Length: 146
Image (cartoon, rainbow, N blue to C red; front, side):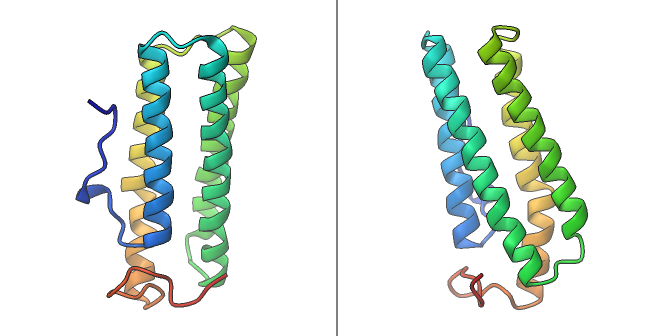
């Protein structure tokens, strides 16, 4: 059974963003599988590194749309992104240094911050963008490209 299961309640209704979120969930599930399956340190670090890189790419994509559509909460949302990036990078660094092994509590932390962000502040901007007409309600695609 997956650590995080994608379901309709996680769907923001924006195709590009939902695909990125699904990929991040896949990586978090892979991290869980490596930790629970006795993966070696190098494998665990590699997956954490992928998560970090994907998060940065995902946040950059979101922020391009915030700027393009002049999302009024873009500065505060950027601040949240910065905090999450610092947290995952610190976790990766501490794991590489051997200071913090990836345990159940670390896995739960990664899961919780991702789901909280996705169903919280991401949902707020998705609703705003759809309400303003920046997302096509028929196909879930942005009406303008960055």
